[in-house]
Length: 263
Image (cartoon, rainbow, N blue to C red; front, side):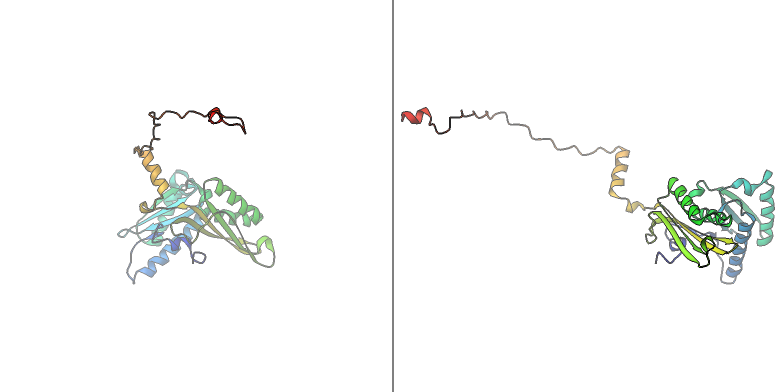
């Protein structure tokens, strides 16, 4: 099951949240969903060089709040905020309601799955060898703290006529473990010899509940809190009332003691 489903959708009820946060009845739902899809396609095309990781869309009471997670916030904002104002007016025209646009910076783009996939697709479009691009991305992600990463590419790799599927993995990527924090991204490289798809899975550690904390972690937390440990049992003291036993003088082998010889 973990191999055949989107890792983010698989964990939505547990430790991941939705990218679109709003409620609608059955009559309004299709139109609002189509608006979200068009907004994301527009932002992806408009901010192609701004390294956009994800777009969060919220709709509180006849308003819209759009949060853009980008590794290059300066490109989105533009000189003196001109670009973001034109972006806001265009989004208001598309949605038909007042729009507030927020920009959040992605601190580590090397460990963001969507940004890794987009970076590899841009390199493939510049005719860089796919193996070199994949291995470089894996090295950078592991160096910056990822516990595991898997990258898969499929299509006419290196322009060969027969399409194939190749993947590389380093570390561990537990897709079946629901508490594992796995980031997932997909991108397409539109090359002159066809479309190449790239998928990226990044394992960033396990999200543990308070009731699931391992015993070692609990003991370490108690030690940090300054809880006194139980004293070690003392060794029993030696009994000084008993006198040491006198050693018997060794006799010559084959000879008898003097007392035995006199008797």
